[in-house]
Picture 1 (cartoon, helix red, strand yellow):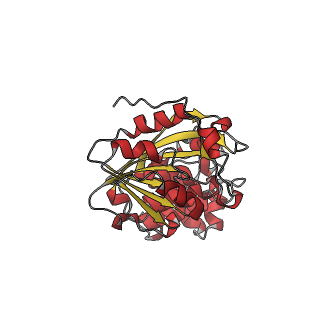
Picture 2 (cartoon, helix red, strand yellow):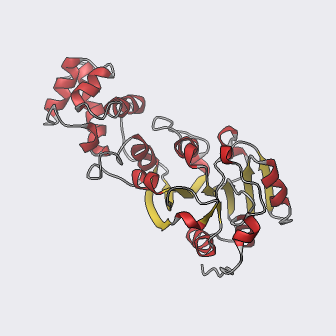
Amino acid sequence: MCVIINIKMNYFERAKFFRTKKRLGQNFLINGEVIQDIIEYANISPEDTIIEIGPGVGFVTEQLVKYAKKVIAIELDEEAIRELKKLNAPNLEIIHNDVLKTDLSTLCEGEFKVVANIPYYITSPIIAHLLGEIDDLNNKNRNKIKDIILMVQEEVAHRIVADENSSNKQYGLLTILSQFWADVKILRLVGRKSFFPAPKVNSALVKLDVRKSPKLELSDYSHFRRTIKAAFAQRRKNLKNCLLNGGFLKEHVTQALNSLNLDENIRGEKLSIEMFGKLSEELIKASKNEY
């Protein structure tokens, strides 16, 4: 889809008249080129329904409504909602609510796409709300989402797409949650001056193509969640000690690590998602004395 947006449109002049609220983490996207990229990356068809999270005063929204069958904008700020209503688009539905308290699966029939420019301090909770936790195999929201275009802090973007070879600080629980239920990639970096008011950090656009089934086939997904939670609970400790502190029995941990030929001093962030799956299964076997 080729999208042409008037990138000379002065979003800054429009945004500066709105009283942004720091408590809501409001930073409005005012870069027309980035807005154009969001629309192109979303790859919207005339039959698509888009759920937009955090539309603010509607700079992205006013473009989404041109291409989608319907746009459902979820916004918490009453003043922003008044601005959204000025768009007067017949295919725009505005919902005044906290997205974390909104059951997205009830908002429309069939599947939908998500576009979100969200407050950075609630990025992880929103991703968990969209995808469901690792052991939530039938999450209602995830089952209806095709894909997600998400504006996040650059540091968080690198955490989402990280792997066991990335920096220790990048690879962690958010990585595994995101990749367990979606194929993820960074689309582009976005400078801090692309927003008003400008945040202190740079941002990035991330795409999550939602999976119909989890990344791994496991016998017990709750046990897998417990395993990785323990492994990342204390990053300065080795994997064995983390698991022991997480309530796993010493003999079970030793058996599982030996079975997988893992050094007891290895740290959790050096294990791939697949290896974590194997570790969880071996811990289950050890607990059942299946050796």
